[in-house]
Length: 149
Image 1 (spheres, rainbow, N blue to C red):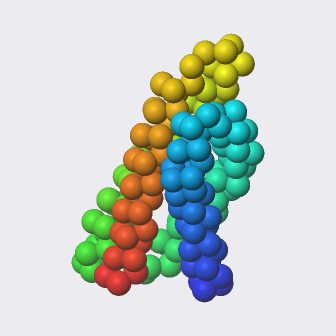
Image 2 (image 1 turned 90 degrees about the vertical axis):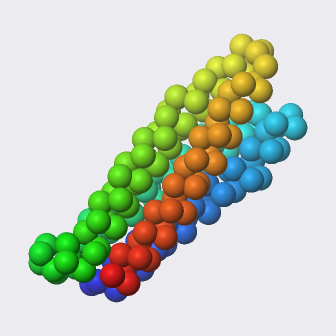
């Protein structure tokens, strides 16, 4: 069961980070060149995949942490501090991703419907995308560090 859980965890991370990278480096630049409507639709359609990946990562991550052994041993190994840092980064990344998906992207959609210039909304989304992607990479690094601690 542990191997399946780790495999699902890694698969979820790949799906999440891959989607983030695609949005930040392919869809975002295309949207700034006039494809804001396509970007908004792609973000809306990709949302269930991204949040499913986040849920899989969270659930399997919790399961994997419970399999590390007694809490005292985890803390003594140095993994405790790494896990705490990873948890804080995960909370930040999920909060930013939620802000993006449930506030900024709908705001972009409203701007497009109302005929407003989407540039401001696209810039904010681009910065959030980059920050979440950076946090996700740091989270993945800490995950590897925990597995080696």
